[in-house]
Length: 417
Image (tube, rainbow, N blue to C red; front, top):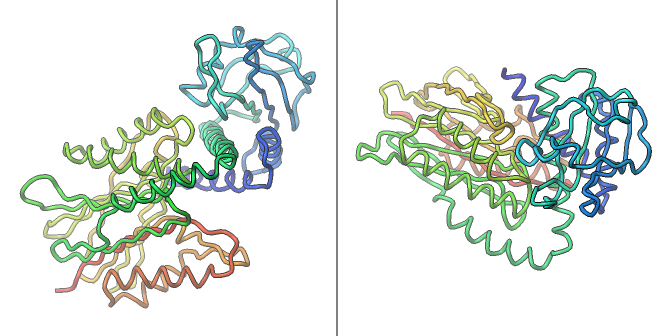
């Protein structure tokens, strides 16, 4: 199961890389993406087609086809009235179905998979995606379904970014306002909780960030636990900022009702899936510090970068891997809850991929080993000093790099008696 969650993350990164080309028009961008996906062996996808909605004729028109598949006549049309399953894309984003079109059946297509991408257009009071992307695979597995969902989300976000480029000045003003709102919502960097020293910082790559962290105290008078959350929205810019603000409010509301962590994650997953039609994926890690005698820390990880638990007395590192998939990737998911014990002197490092996957000019990533080395060197410092040591190291590592990302860190250190 752990490998499956890691595979989700790897596939997302790969699709994001494939779509980061220089195309600045919608259809050429999607054509390039479909071609690259079919040629990428990791996906095991043998062919792809792009259908574009034509509202006037109430049909989807074939615009592009590539790969090992039977060729369909150019500009072939499929009436939406004869393919009611296409309307289901608005709800499910990914549809697997038996082929009913006579010509397509003659071409040997018995079964198909299709995803919705791009703007939402209303035709005869029914909503449809502007583009429908069909893919063929040797066999239909759960991993194939998840990969299609990832492709849909990343492609839609990329198309929206193209449109945003046309409205640069308006968006710039929105970003200034959103940036101010985000700064006001982030907690103070430093907080102490009994013998825990906690320090967090978020450094946006641009005016706003899809990264988010927060400290959440228990609502009862005993104040015997402290929640710490860190998340990363899959999209970029203003849409990511909106998503992170949504997560912030939703998780605080859920915890105010003393929901179980597993239930909270399931509810969050459903909310994100139902609320965000364009950018659905969010990774999130939540842990709860307690004042139990053994200092038990409960945690759940929805596809987020695995936090590092460092036990310096025996120089041992433990990665707190996923206990569930991305929030929003599927309408119904289950999330597990795990625990660790924090001994005096132990350090828990929460971070986003802007730290672990920061890249230098030679396309080398910062990586876990460098993070281990920094923790070893700074184990006797305060949480704040450890945090800034990481930021300084990443900054030096990426000084001449072409690409950068939001960087967020939270350091939790249990003080020695």
